[in-house]
Image (cartoon, rainbow, N blue to C red; front, side, top):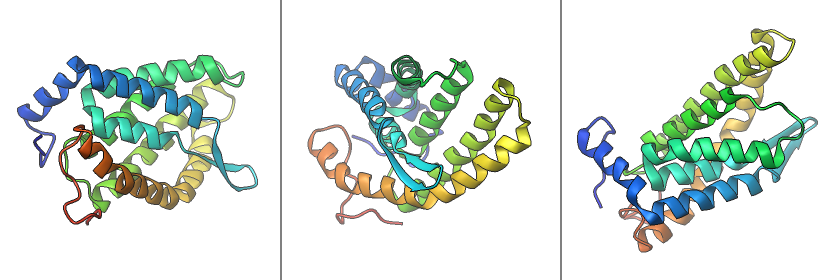
Length: 198
């Protein structure tokens, strides 16, 4: 299996497109959809009215294994099924599906067939959190009564608080699972020194 230095090559996208024809990739994606739905009920309390959702772990793992083409379908399926199975009374809004798909794409562009480093993990998580703030605030402003700046300010504070913990969780998850996924033939060798580098 080949590692790519950048996603800006035709070979990278050909490899990513082939994932859609892989039965194992589709099964893995379906498992990650199920994991997201289960994980949506598991939140880490961080204080009064603050809890950290851990669904981003399954999304990032799916992006790592399946690539940027397959995660478009994954993101659409995961967001839609999550809504119907556990919406909590909130209305369905397709903007949130777009946010999920774009977040998964960002993870895939940083992680799929790339050498996993702490730098990549930090950048991917920072960008997805910024995207969540900007788009999530827009969707909230469209759906509810308060203005965009209000939602953006509260979301930015929460995402800034969550960011260090999310980075560590993602790094430790990859550290644990990269060797396993390599042995299963899903990934090229990622940790020649048994740990994620910089």
